[in-house]
Length: 272
Image 1 (cartoon, rainbow, N blue to C red):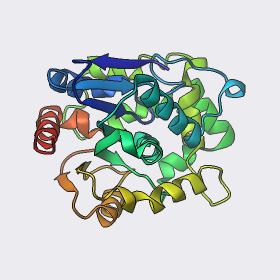
Image 2: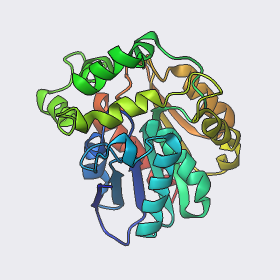
Image 3: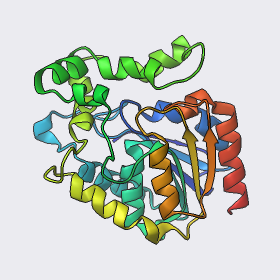
Image 4: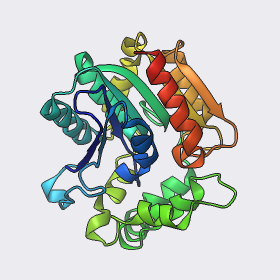
C-alpha cells in the first residue's frame, strides 16, 4: 500500500483517506498547505493510486478489507494523536479505523461522505453496478472516473486540465481500474450485502466519538452524498463544527481548495 508522508515526523499526524475514484492526489493542496506544521499522511487504498492492484482473487476489496489496511498502516507508523481527514468512501473506511484504534486518534475532519448504510442510491450509480454494462464501462472504459471529473465539481470552468489528468493518471488500464469497479460493487443495496452490517456497526458507534473535536465540511450541491448525509452526522455529533458550501460539489476540496485548507488549519490550531 502506497502512501504519501510529508512534514516533520514528530509533528501531530494527519491521516488522509480518499474515496472512489480518487487517490492521494486529491489531498495535494491539504498536504502542501499543512505539512509545515503537521505530519501529513495520505494513503492510496489497495487497487488505487500508486498502490498494488491485485486481481480480485488476491484481495477482497470489501469495506472491511480497506479498514483493516488503514489500521495496519496506523500501527505500522505507530501514529498517536492522529487526525482523520476523509472523503467519499474514505469516511466509512476512516471512521471504521478510528473506532478500532480509538486510542490513537484525537480529531476527525470529514468532507462529503457517509458512515452508514446508504439512504439512497442515485440512478447513475445504480447503472454503474449493472453486471455487464457496469464492469465494461467502469473497468474497460474508465467511465466512472472520467464522469467524476465533470459531475463531481461545481467549478464554473470545470477542473483544470492538469488536475483532471492527475486524478485519472493511475487508472490507465483494465487491470489498474479494478478498485473503481469493486468500490461501486461494494455499495450495499440490501441488508444481505456483506458490507451492510459493517456500515450498520459503524453508524451505531458514531455517538461514541461525539466527544472528539470534529469538523464537517460539505459541498451542498453534491448529488451523491447529499445534505441529508451531513444531517445524519450532525445528529450523531451535535457539537461538530459544520461548514456548508452552498455552491460546492462532491469534490469540495477541488472546488474550494484555499478556503478548505484555511478552515482545516484553523480547526486544527484551535483544537490542539
